[in-house]
Amino acid sequence: MLSAKTLFQEIVDNDDSFALFCSIAASGESQGGWENARIAALVPETQRDLAPKITRHGADEDKHGRIFNALMKKRGLEPVPVPQDTDYTMLLESNGIGLAHDKLKRDEPLTVQDIVTYLAHSRVTEQRASEQMTMLRKHFADHPDLGRAVRMISDDEDNHLAYCHEELLRFAYAGHGRAIQRTLRECALAEIRVYRDVSLAVMAHMGRILGWSGPKAAVLAAGIHAVYAYERAGGWRRMVSLRTPERRDALGGPASPEPEAA
Image 1 (spheres, rainbow, N blue to C red):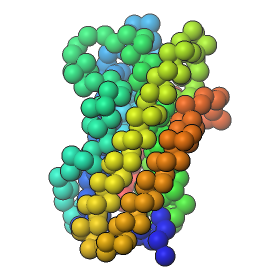
Image 2 (cartoon, rainbow, N blue to C red; image 1 turned 60 degrees about the horizontal axis):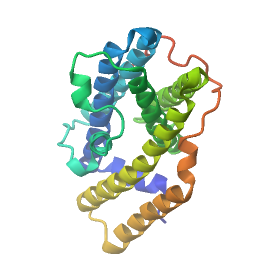
Image 3 (tube, rainbow, N blue to C red; image 1 turned 30 degrees about the vertical axis):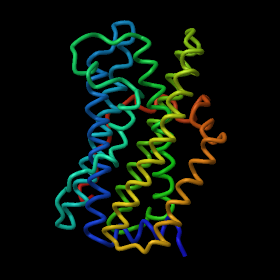
Image 4 (cartoon, rainbow, N blue to C red; image 1 turned 45 degrees about the vertical axis):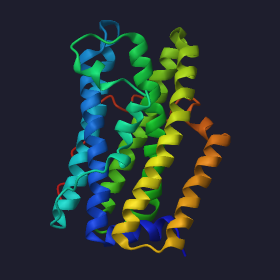
């Protein structure tokens, strides 16, 4: 019987598929770390109070990248090249979502609208990350090798999502509500397409590594398309709602260190 747990367990149990999974995850986290560090450096003067939180966000992402690399190293594995069709972060950028790397590479202060765009993009992508880590936490929180890393990353992603809610509400109260809702909608509709395409690509690469049969691959692809159909029909709306989070000032302190034995 196919389930999220059995599917991921199959990927974890094979060195080649595990190395690809961790390499994809580490690459995405590292890119997120770089983006947040640049945004923190370029925050406009009127929003300088946000810089430490953006820095913390980036530090968490960098930490997650190191954790995934450490998980490979623990099994004697080396990172592998990340196929372009699985690069979620760069595919989002190529679809015009978030702040372009060309902008972040320049030493020009960002605008308040740029910060709103960054937060809206993060609110959508952190929703996805939080949900994925909640799923992994449900099935692998007690795993002897993965458990501690999964729990830590899951907690961090929940903090990131809470931070996005809180800061976007602050900007909404300051008069940016229409821009926030417009940007959230654009980001969400683009993200669900990119997530579908990346999921199909990842499953195709995993299928070749693990030797999945045609029928098994077809069932998995159908499941991915079904998720997209649900999200396109209205599931995307969960990514654009804003509410006061239970975790207040979630990124108000330093990043926690990664597990030494992760």
